Image (tube, rainbow, N blue to C red; front, side):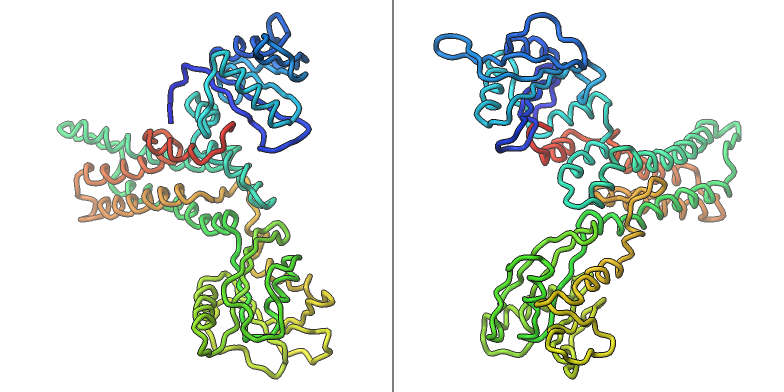
Length: 447
């Protein structure tokens, strides 16, 4: 990925396919000049004011009109990237949009790399790194909960929390370094006992951030719910009913499901990955036996397992499922409910809404809802760096209290600085170029 911001870049900023409107975005020092060569309008663009004009492309017999478009100019630094930005809103025909991009390249722009617009926003100080990563998360959000968490991070909730921790560390490091700088004079800018107490305060903050990582994982990845049980108890029928489509094959033949069948659904704003599994039984069939082992493996790592039975007299399989619900299927047959089981019918829909509510309630979705005063870490990179900072702080505290605080300040400083470096890597203040290239390469072209 080229990190130069001296040239002007162009890309289609709307999703592939046909639509009512498609947007071509230009960013860089020559955006206005390039845009002027694309359209029939003459004169200066008024900042943040839409201009209706004809878009021209170069044909064999000279420039020709291809569409009427609305052109909007956002001058630096008050734009998404912090540079001069021009957006051409045309009709959403892929042919038209590609022609506009080709004409812009012919006029002096170059094609943008994936994520290069957001990268420029980061390099120009419009966004910090967590906010830039939140842009990708917001685009990829599949549920309202994921969108809310990404938007809060885009608004700077995580950045603020990290900055608070960093400020505490900066003050402590400054005091310790001042003490090191004046050893002969005997100046100590912080009492030795206070060093350990201050580190404890910082550790409380990183503890809270790490506690939020579990909520963040559930928000980002969602819940994994496995449907398990013996053959022919209605697992696949229940799976199809919850999904709302015939995804799994349903027959009267035991052992129809041989492999894991997965589908992602939205339950009350929570992303849930449902997994239909092979019936749990001993089998001489090599393929079915492999499917049963996969079923056991899926249940072992599931957030929740729905253990399906179809007869109240049946005992669930003697398996270890962790958190589970016993679901008695085929309620339309009029059988007595097994004590402690949830009674459902995939045929009539009886009990399905109650089951959906129970799945979500088992994980306290209200607790998962993002709050401004409690940022949830949803990014694996951020979690790893907070863990690294936390470990360095623990080492620093050990050094600070060792021998009654008699160790020289340098022993504490080394680990405090390592903790601060990890936090600065989260915000991008110490992000190396290869890390930036990796992060922004995941973005779509045009963002």
